[in-house]
Image (cartoon, rainbow, N blue to C red; front, side, top):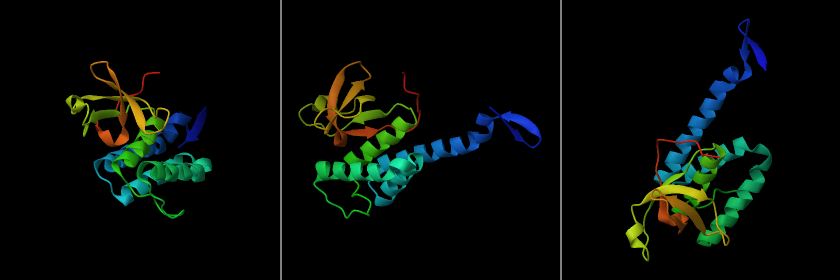
Length: 165
């Protein structure tokens, strides 16, 4: 598709590139803030980014994250407020954002007790949530797969790579 800009025909992707790139950069910045701390304003910004990406589903998405907070933390925040942030919830929201951008979600395992030998190992989330909704499947860099709770990994920021199909 070609569009006219300043008297010249340009591919539509060229003209929309600045908007797209800004949205991607804003999303990545939001993910990095979200996974660096557990501040309510970072979570609110991330949820607003998701709502902007999927405007027709924003109410459904907010309801989903409220249900996740209730499951993860037992929290029942008022309906119109931002859920209480936690490392687990922030990781879930950050994963949703990175997944929407079709990027890999690189992680480092932390805080494991019964499998403490895995702390510090790095990998990538391969499956968002396993049945029961509390564990995620991660493929470690050595090729092994582990099931891990969202509270037991941190996102490794920077060096974003496209997901392989």
